[in-house]
Length: 394
Ligand code: PLP
Image 1 (tube, rainbow, N blue to C red):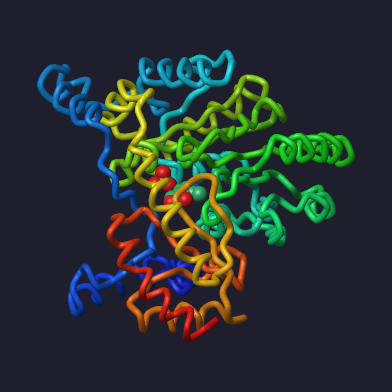
Image 2: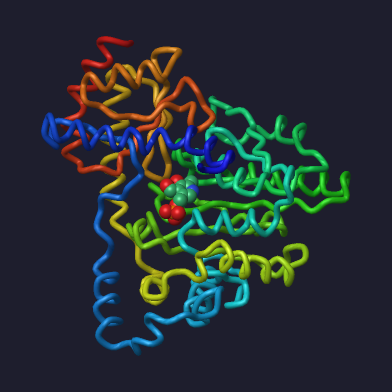
């Protein structure tokens, strides 16, 4: 029999995945082109050519013992050095290989962080709406996730409530920008104010509070909007990054953590995260894809594809009378449900073969998430279906 804890986790298992499975079934019945599946954040733009070139070259020319072998739990020195240099170049920082740990995507990076920092009962504060898996990542280590309610006027973090909820038990604050599910980018002002609250509370409680910033969408930004580099605002910041979206490599499982030397107890924290990478069973990030990303740090997937999707979908839906948050980044559109019960709205959408995800899973009921990392034709073909949905619900 499975353990008690897993029973709870299986029961609450991702509604998004369930919807994706449902989409597959619907496509088999109605035909792929007649189902508008906006459920999953799975990139549909191919990785840059440079990724393929790197894979081919590595397979043909790299020493197979290096390419496929075990290594340091933190990853290849050459990869970590290249990552540090690329981050330095973009942000004017001074990191070295010793500030980087290669991870099995952003998901494993966050698990490594929480494994290393949380005692049972420690609190992690996050801001709704947030990536639904955060609940699991924190529960894995018997932490307690504190959800700050959403500010639906701007979808920036609600800092007054945040300040009031910090306690002696607060160990981490977890932020994600560009945000899944809203596409909103947290502003420099938000981080400046958040940092001053954190400094004040650390002094008040005599504790260390780590700000963990989850950034798989850092490069997916439309227009000239800056994504602030969070360690510049607060020294106890740990950055989690992933190539899942920026290079369209979610199945390859590759990302990294940056642990700046300024964080409290740096040596201990870095060593713990290296051990956590091993004992959680990841051992090290995938060897070949470490070497691939090392060569592709200046590459990104075709962001203009997502931008066109965003523009067409946003304009189409607002013209129909739906109220949407205009996303500045990532590839999600957060739309206000015309019905109070957004789960019922998502059920009605299925009648028109539209698969969208209820906001409750992201801690924000009354809204729905539309993942527009789909073919442009899907967006165009879905608009008449959305029109019918509008006629029935608006
Ligand atoms: N964090 C956020 C906000 C995400 O949206 C995702 C994936 O969709 C992840 C983490 C997990 O990413 P990865 O595939 O790199 O583990």
